[in-house]
Image (tube, rainbow, N blue to C red):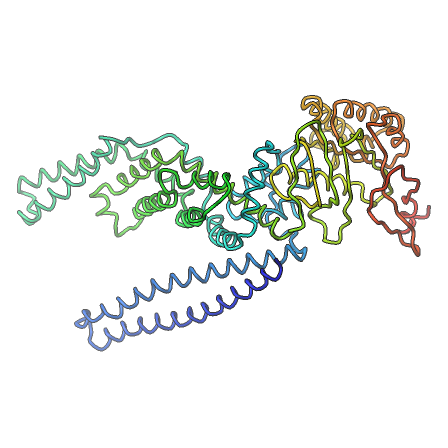
Amino acid sequence: MHAEYASRLEERRRTLAALERVHARFSYVRLGLAAAAIATIGVGGWGAAAWLALPIGALLVVAFLHARLLNRRDAARAAIAFYERALDRLAGRWAGRGRSGDRFKPADHLYASDLDLFGRGSLFDLVATVRTDEGEETLARWLLAPAPPDVVRARQAAVRELSPRLDLREAVAVVGQAVRDQVKARLLRAWASSPRRLPGGPIRLLFPVLAAISIATLALWLVRTGGDLRDPLAYVVLAVLAAQGLAAQIFRNRVHDVAHAVDEPSHELDAFASLLEILERERFQTDHLRRLQADIVGDDVASGEIRRLSQYVAMLASRENVLFALPASLVLWTTQWACAVEAWRARRGPALTRWLAAVGELEALLAFATLAAEHPDYAFPEIADGPPRLTAEAIAHPALPERAVANDVSLGDGPVRLLIVSGSNMSGKSTLLRTLGVNVVLAQAGAPVRAARLVLTPLDIGASISIHDSLLDGRSRFFTEIQRLKRIADLAEGRRGHVLFLLDEILGGTNSHDRRVGAEALLAALAASGAVGLATTHDLALAEIAERLAPAAANVHFEDQLLDGTLAFDYRIRPGLVRTSNALRLMRGIGFKV
């Protein structure tokens, strides 16, 4: 993909340079036409005002064409940014340059913080190539909860179809940026589902009828009498205007509420319509993508309906033009367009929620498709049936560089359901836990994983890796940890073992005797439930637990070597118990006299 991205980036840069040159010419032409208009008045005076139609008409045409060129220029800039970010990802320069997703981080989730799903340098930061708020929310929701196996398989098929469609990903990214900047999905959903404020049916017809009568009687009075206030027709005009004013006053507060409610969420609806048009035009093969497209097209084409709403909102917004205020009041302009907006919402509000959801899901699938396209060596996992198990071949963390060491892990494919991982500091124990957890999250969201092969049954994740004390809540680290461990044990019991547990330095906040007894009891209960997982430790006494829980448990370890006075790690799992420690050597290496 690097060559394709680089080629397209250069092409988009050439396009932008050409557009910038044309933009400069348009600017000169507009200045010239403005000067021509001024010169026409200067030479011929206001008597030559009729000749102004030529330069002014030409100026309007040029301004229209210039605006279209500026839109193309903005699209070229967005495309350049799209490919620059893509090349940054391939070069490993992605951390902090995407979307952190911090707003989606739930409190006390069973694995979100432990696996670094959100934040700078997180999985979300890497994977979230989405552009809209709805796409972000959908992707975050998928990462926070595993999907059923049939849904995972449907998403995988969709991702496979979308991964080669670079043109589609670019188009969605370019248009989606404008949607993200202006269209607020949450506000739109809330607006679409709020109760109706203005009546429809016969009462709504009252407003255009009153406006038509007002205009007709006013015109008749002016034509027949020249505006003579003594003529009886003047009283008819006044009566009709009074009736119109009374109707406007009765609904005044509700009209204001409607106008205010639609103002904030409806910015740049045309950009959202353009995004929908892109998705409507595509021809999909997989059933899942066709169903999503059907949600957008349906009985009414979503893009057309959104553009209609955009027109209604624009008409409603024109009420703020001071010069238009008087004629607008004569035709109940604000009231009539507020009714039109309300009628649209009553008719299409439920569909709008469905359209937003479909766009969000398509964007999330495109994000996974980007991951698949940029990493063709990643595998699509197999979701299996049967007892809890996980088999991974050459698995590595997707956020690590290409040179990262991959390992094989097998849980539940034989008698072993628990691996106790020992090893010295910095040898890779915690990274192994996060590697398994993150890839399982991706697998059960429908994405490819960084592994040569991954087979797993549906597994809920329970992790205890990044546990901290809480000063505000008055909880020590140990108490926080045992609360988390209790939740994981309850989850394993409730899910009949369909749980992947990832425990780092289990019960490290207490004395060695209590730690050993408590850890053995917990691990034995997890193994007995049928759950599969890993527990890391520095304490070699804990590693002996595997011998007592055999054959359900086994020891594996990471090693380090001292080469020319420097510690070296190969980050490869080996069977058995580690026999070395590097804590004192690390302390001496930074100057401690121990």
